[in-house]
Image 1: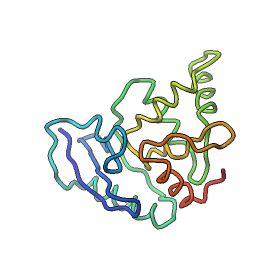
Image 2: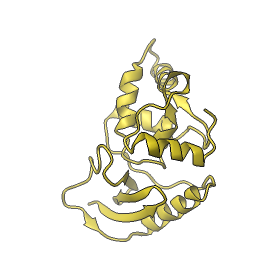
Image 3: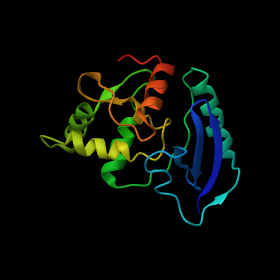
Image 4: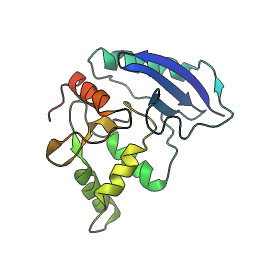
Length: 165
């Protein structure tokens, strides 16, 4: 069973989803792939986990790096989960390219090459925005490409973190 809650961020409304294992979704309202993995029978209910997530977001939107983690429960393919786990390792204020993630995946899997485009598809389907920092993934040479929440929000999130582009 999934439960939902809402949060008002400086960038607009945020919709949260969780189950008994952890946070399953964090979407800007109206973004691409909004609530894609949300159970039809979800229930709006305040959970202690949502209090933790909202506290994390309050700290983040104050311009600071939250110094704690939130329990996550990824819903997706094995490949997507591998990509999302790499996203979680991108430090606050830093960026990584799709190609760098593809090379890292190839190394982890012991293969010569992984597709940066396939990585881009997995990044784009990340259901836990901000906390799983897909906004920190950039194109070759630091170009700001794709973000399900919108490029304007991606720019604002990177500016908030004072990211080195």
